[in-house]
Each structure stands twice: as structure tokens, then as C-alpha cells.
Image (cartoon, rainbow over all chains, first blue to last red; front, side, top):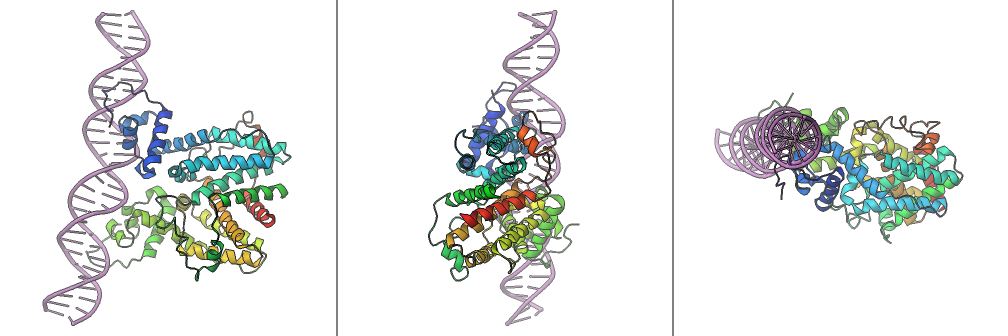
Length: 208
Length: 208
DNA sequence: TGATCATTCATACATCGTAAGTATAGACTG
DNA sequence: CAGTCTATACTTACGATGTATGAATGATCA
């Protein structure tokens, strides 16, 4: 399972390959199981070898977030109204995070300011400026949209969270919380609130 | 510094006192320094004694989030328009998180579904229903507002994050990212974007 | 007083991140 | 080809962590 190789013999590893392994490991076993030794085993190398590619574990985690964003942030679509294009961007970002739920706590607690994310931001600004938004408003909108998506994913129920997180709504006492109970009467589809909030925010900026 | 007490002698500790100690410790030294042994020292007790109040460290962290929310969520104001009241709520929530920056990563990666937070949600719904919102829309709005605040705080620059996080804007290459550079021309005050995003979202829901 | 119970502490273990040092494969030099 | 250098990987070791287990003692009540 673990590395079987004499010293000095190349393992043919790259930074990206290590990060791929880390994503695989976390997807499969959860964030808590990501240790240097285990990651080493995943990519068939001893733990310390990983320090050739990352200064320390924290740097590895930063790299992981960046890695995820870099595969996520396809260019924005180049046709459609600015609202459609912004909406699509928000959905694309959400999709990536939904596909790697175990990585969400990491992404969410580790603001990414990589060149990659700056590029996406620049593209978003271009769309909005073209649509007539002043520079500062455009920046506010791009930022705010990102913030909302992050917040939505952060507070979305996940496995491995506090017990009864998933079905805690089923257990709500209608006497203590009548309005919540009422509002939950007709449950929504997955992501329906997301749509609505994104639209609301875009609408709000459109008129602000 | 550490516990100086014979076995069996009560320490006069409560769950709340332990959590207070944890907040103090994290505020002072950072989340990374919160270990059972250190927390024990902070409240003058051996590490294992803490397990009388919390099943394990994870439960302690959950308790910490709940603890923070419970001091945060003063009731909503009972006068003003619904928009003013929602706005004030968002600002109150933000204020608490700003006051404990080191706890933000915790709050953000650990959705709180305590009775306390349900109470606040119920109050929020009451305000909105009174203002004429349908049940589901009201729930969407309360949720979305919370999500935005969380996201805003999650992505806000913090100490101890990736290097140059604070001043990375100063280092932006205007050739590579002209629109970002332009938008940063006239820098905003702290929390100005927050105001704007909250208002946009409320506005959007008001018209949706 | 003596017995029961609640509470705390001491010990121990597996696992973690990583500092320090060592060995080897492959590349370069002559 | 022989000799050297260097990049790469491994080994060992240390302190710190979360926590299982069980002993020791103060508190409580008969």
C-alpha cells in the first residue's frame, strides 16, 4: 500500500498529482482523514516526500483550495444578458462545491486570492462594465455574489455535521416555532432558494 | 498555572464557564491553540476533566458556536419598517463575528441549528409575515440573509491567512487586471460593501 | 461513622505535523 | 568509462494532540 521504492528513485510526482490525490482522499474519506502520512500512502510515497512540494500542511490546504477553484472557474459564458451570465457564474461555482462536499469547509474557511480567482473576477467586471455599471458597483456586485454563494454552501447541511442536522427540520416543534413549521409546509427543491436569492441580489443591484 | 487540586475536589466549573474560557483562549491565541490541555489550563483544570462537560472536542466546538450565537442574537428591534429591522439584524450578526475574528472559521464551517438560532429565525419570520410576505418567501429571505452574512465574514480577510491577504490589492498588476485596478481606485470604507449587498438583497426580495 | 457517588486527576497509546539526517538514482564532468 | 554532484526519497525521532481507562479523593447522606 505504502511506498515501495529505494531512496532517491523518482516517484514521478508533481504538485498537481499530489493535489489530485488529496482531492480523491478527501472526497472518499473526509477532511479529517487527510494527514500527511495518509496522503503519502494515497500517492504512493512517504509522508516527508510531500514536503518537496509543499512547505507545510497549511500550504497544502491552500493549494487544495486553489486547485479546486482552478478547475471550477471556467470562463463566463460570452453570450446572454449580464444577469444571465452572472447567474450562470454563480451556479457554476455552486456546482463545483456541491461535487466536493467534503472540501466545502476548507474552501469556506480559507479565502482564495489566487491569480485564478482574480482572473474570474476581472472577467465578471468586464461583463458588468459593458452593461453600464460603474466600476465600484460592478466590484461590489461580483464580490457580493461570491460571498453569497460561499455562505450558502457553508451553511448547507453536510454529512458529518452535528447530529440531526439533515432532518432537524422534521423534528421542529410546531408549537414553539409555528412560523417555521408553516413555511416548511411545502418543502422546496434542492437549490430553489439558491436561485431565488441570487436573482434577488442581481435584481437589487440592477435597481440600486 | 495548571490545576492544583486533589482528586475529587470540585472545581466549580460549568459548561458555560468552559465555553467562556474557550472564547477567551481563542480570542487571545487563535483557533490553532485551542487544545484540550490548553483549555484545561485556561480554566484551571486537567484536560480530561473537560470531558465531563463535552463528549469530545467536536462537541465542544459545536458548543462554542452555539455559545457565540446565543450571546449574539439579541431580539430583533420591535420598531421600524421590515427592511430596517432585517438590516439591523444582519448588522448585529456581523458585529458579533467581527468581535471574534478568530472564531469565524469555526462558525462558518459548522452550521448552527440550535434552538437559539431557531428562535431568531422565528422572530424574523414574524416580522416578514406581518409585512405581508408569504410564508415561503419569508423563509427564503431570512435564510438568504443569514447565508450572505456568513459568506461575507467567511471571505473577509483575516489574520493568519495566506500571506499578503491583507494588502494583496495593493499588489495587483494593473496591466493584468485593469478593471479590478480601476474599481479599487477609490477604496471603500469597512463594511460599505456589506451594507450595499444587504440592501440589494432586501430590495430584490421586496420586488421579487 | 461508614458507604455510595460524583468528580477529578494520572497514565498510557495511537496518531499527528515536521525537524534533522541519511541513502540512493540519475545527471553531469572529465 | 570513472568520478562527482545534486535532486529526490526515505528513516528516525520529538513534542503535541485527542481520548480510553481506571485509580483516587472530596462530597453527600444513612
